[in-house]
Structures are given as C-alpha cells and as structure tokens.
Length: 498
Image (cartoon, rainbow, N blue to C red; front, side):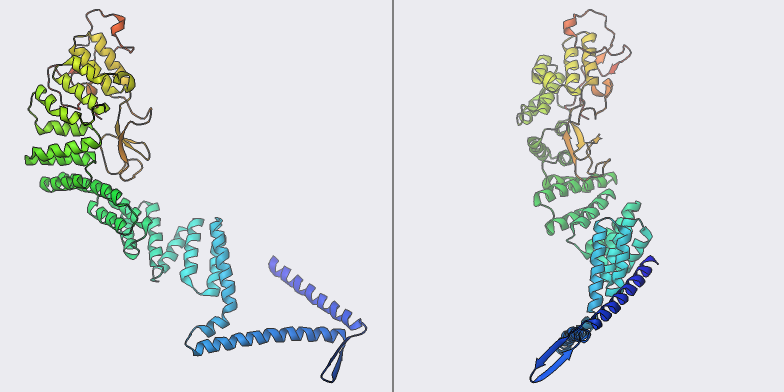
C-alpha cells in the first residue's frame, strides 16, 4: 500500500515537472536553425526538444529491429529458441536478477527473503530446476521443513535435479533420526552420483551403524575407485570392516567363515591389533601354531599390546612358567624397551617366581610410567619377596589411584572403550580408536580384585614394618581380600589390561 502511494506521488511529480518544462521551453526566445542540402528548418526550443527525443527513440527502435533481424536469421539457421529468447530477454534479465538476489539472501542467512526472490525468479524464468532448489534451501533455513520436502519431491521429477532432491530428503531423514530410510536414500543418491564424496561418507557411516559390513566394504571400494580415499587408508579401513564382519559371523555361530574373515582382515592390515589377535586365535583353532606365531610377531613389531601377548600365550596353553618365559623372549626382544614389553617380562618372571628379575624388568617404570598395572606388579613382587601385608596394601592403594595406562580411546572425542570396536560408542566416528593413554581424569578407578589376580592372603598385618618400606599411600581396608593363591599360574597381560 505504501509503495503504491509512493509510485503515484512520483508519477504526479514527473508529470508536473514535464509540464513546467514544456511551459518554460515555450516562453524561451530564439530557437534551433538546421540548414542542410539547400533546406533550412527553424525550430522553437520546444519543438527542438521533441525532435531530439524522437531521434533517440528512433535510434533505440532501429537497434531493436536489428536485434530482431539477427534473431530471425538464427531461427532460420536452426536455433529454435532464438525468437523466444529475443522476446523474453527482458523477463530473463529480471528473473536472473531476482535469482542472484535470492542466492545472496540465502548466503546472508535471510531465508524468508530468499524464498520471495526465488518465487519472483520463477515467474520470470520458468526454470524450476533452478528456482526450486533455491526455494528448498531457503525453506530449510527458515525452518519450514514441510515446504522444503514438498519442493524436493518436485525436484525428483527432473533427471538433472533428482540427485539433489534425494540428498535433500536424506538429510531431512537423518535430522529426524530415521536412519533406515536415510540409508536407502543414501544408496539411491550414490547410484545417481557415485563420485559424490559426502554421500559416500554418509552411506559408509550408516552402513557401519547398521552392521552392514559387506555393504560398507562396497562403499569403501567406491571411495577408492573414485579417488576420495588413499590406497593405504582404504586397506586399513577395509581390514576394520572385514574384522567387524568376522565378529558378526562368529556371533551367528559360523566359526569357519569368521575365522576366514579374520585372517583376511589381518592380511589387509597386519598392524591392526584386534585383527591380528583374532586371526591368531583362528590359526590356533586350526592347529596352525606356526602361522599364529608369525601373525602375532608381525603385529607386535608394529605395536606391542596385551591382547597379542594373550594370544601368543594361547598357542601353548599348558606350558610351564619357565618354558613360557623362554618362548616369549624372542617376542619381547623386538621392542625390549617398550613399556608393554617390560611389563610382560615382569609378569612372566612373577609367574616363574623370579621376583628379583621381575623387579629388574620393571626398572624405573614406577617413576616414569606409574600406572595401575605397574603398581599392581610391584604389589605382586612385594608379596612374592615376603614383604609384609602393609607394604603390599600400600602398593595396592597406589594402584587404585594411579592412571589406568593405555586403553582403547577414541581419538576424536576421547571416549574410553573397554574393548576395541569399529565405531565409537559416543561420537559414532568410524575407525578412530587407538591404544593410548586417555587424558588425565578420564579413566575411572578399578577395584583391587580386578587388577590383582595373583596377590592373595589376609590383608591383616600382624608384623611390624619400617616406614621406609611402605609406599606413600593409604592402607586398604582390612576386609579387602584377594582370591587367587600366590602359586597360581598367571597369563601374560592379565594385569590391568583394560
């Protein structure tokens, strides 16, 4: 209403200005004299202005006629849209101007204005493949989900915009938590545009969350094929998926298929610790100790880990502590200074009841890496050497408050997992778990009975002990008891592995 009033006022002002100008020109003296080819024309100022305006109009008309002539010639030469483009040129100019203004409004976060400009552009251009897309995105920005979905469904009818429509609806379903429908839409979107990296990532995440490991491996292969994933990363993640598939098959009761999948995962990525441990146990079940040993040694060379030590112990489950210590020494020799190697050697010596050697294996870990497992081993050594219960309980108390040591930690959100999984339970990221020490304060304390399978006996202290022999820690409650006898065999890596 206000704009209409402004336009009326402007029109009246222009008419009044034109009338005043005409009156002024009529009252002027003199005029314009034109002489050419023996002819002479004298014009008053008013007629001179009118003639000038007529000449300008004639030039404009001539240019328009020339442009029409060019369009007719193009039409005759086979350009079927030449004439329509000529007559619609002004509408196109207005339409594209509205479209560009709508895009700028969308970039500025003005969803309502962008929708209005898109509607105006549609009236002038009649190109829904452009304006509908702008309308859908503007509707999403404005929070009008119903309008956005309606426009996306219209875009499905056009081959050139079908992928954008499917992707838009997929995002809406993801926002609604409807992952089953989103998974089907992601598969359709990838069929339409196999090279689209974002769609590949979304589909891979949805397939992994749904435990569709075979489908996830196909999607991973597509990422490699179209260059959105380096070859080495593909091999690692393909191994993760193969291992996950193996565990799924094992849950269903098919041991043979699970064993083959685990072996395949290990071949794809020999340094993937869970795959190596799983494959080694598969070889052990086959009775192939040689291959199991080879797999574990190769993975241990990449990174020592308690699960690898446990799998290596399972190769010969009934051997004596002395024989086990001898068999483990070549494995430990690959990384003799690694914390895991030193802890493993200490635990093997504890099982062999060689407590001085166990203490030498730990060395300065009490000062340099004072985690719960180190303190637990020190408690076991103290018990084995005949120290009083006060000393043993002092080490146990320190173990309860010490850091837990390396665990499976998500590198993205730092969430701690009790065991390796392909997808983080917290942030749902794929293949982000690493065997590292969690950030300070992230780990929860464990109980003494969980950490100390080889310390036993009454926690009552019936003797006297000097203050120098007791670590600086509180004494555990007298009612705490531990349940394993001191001469019970101990598996390497049993102590505070998780």
